[in-house]
Image 1 (cartoon, rainbow, N blue to C red):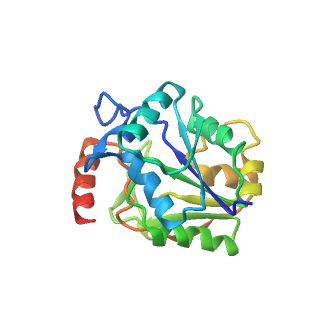
Image 2 (image 1 turned 90 degrees about the horizontal axis):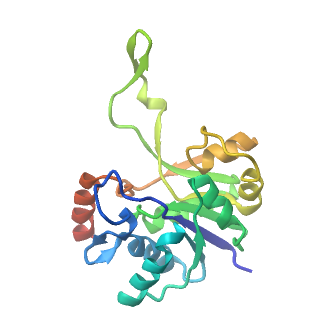
Length: 222
């Protein structure tokens, strides 16, 4: 039985990045971003079950990219839903691992250390998320203006978010809520507590043109 599964969510359409293609298919050093992301997990553990969720209308395009770039990394394709929540629900049907991570397809710079740290921490908790401290000053809007917030208690949340499969499947067996911003919020609503571990600073999510510029610098450094 496969011990670990990673669901890579790739349902974005690239509207914020201003591209004609969904952002996961944009090229980074001559290769689609999603392919870089897939390779990170495969290079860490070639026995890991890898699942990609994609909009059904873009599945054939992805298959053509796999052929064009001669990418033979084994993975399963699952049709995404109208929301990220629905996409994860669809993917969970195919999960074989006892432990499952959910990762953004446009985070190609997650480190092996971060991935291992998240999965290994499942020995301590059934729900683990990688985070970084907030660096910027933070203000909260109120009806009377804005107020400063103590950033020392705040964290920026990354992926992969890792869980025991039984917990994640049980948590997603519920109705969607607009309060579900990530998988951790879904399992918290179910009643589970979440353990935070360190992420790596390069683990950015490519959602805008400036992110793409930063990614080009990171890939050269790598």
